[in-house]
Amino acid sequence: MRYWIGFTGGYDSTYISWRLLKETNHEITLVNYSQTFMTKNREFSTAGASAYQQVNCRRISKWLKKNVRDHKFKIINQPNFPDNTDFAKQYMHDCAELANNDVADVFVHGLVGFYTDRWKRMLAEFEKYATKGRMWFPLTEWKKDVAHQMLELPEELEKMAISCHGPGTEENGNLIECGGCPKCIRNQLVKENLSNGNSPERAMEMLFEEPIHPVLFQAREFRKQRNSVVWNVSVESQKTR
Image (tube, rainbow, N blue to C red; front, side, top):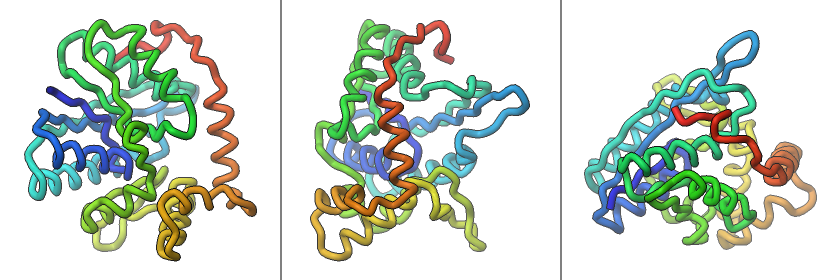
């Protein structure tokens, strides 16, 4: 079987890639999408992180090839998106086209879907246009959130995973998280909860117990709004590139 994994170098996609390479003999392709938005005035990178993502994805892919097994790695450039593009929907359209062209058999998304039903809408969007192939959300099936991933990933690989909206570099050239975005705040709190002896499930539950960190509160409200949106935009308005 040929697996196509949307790969950002964050915890979710790194964990999925590691497990599939370790536990299966499938043909694996890790795919990093380098995307930019267009506004009326200028073009800008998604969260300013695309260049850093590429560096980190290459580094993780190299580690996986050395320590687990061989696989394919590629970067797909997708410039000039409208600034209101829903990239989850876009990925479904991209993968549907790839499936129809027999590029791969299984397409993987790293959504942790056991908190919402957003994955069901994403799957329906894929199945609307795909005539073959399968869209899979392994973290939903495995019930593995970031706390589980932090504990289960090999220590060296866990340190390489960067889930951040705007990473930078240290003086020695290593990538470093910004420390202030929602994913960084989440990761810091989860690690603290785990270090205090909490289970992975409890470490995640504690994130949204009062008092909720203001950055996480804002992120949660944004997700509620996003998850309530019904996808009614035609495929022609967000064409697969």
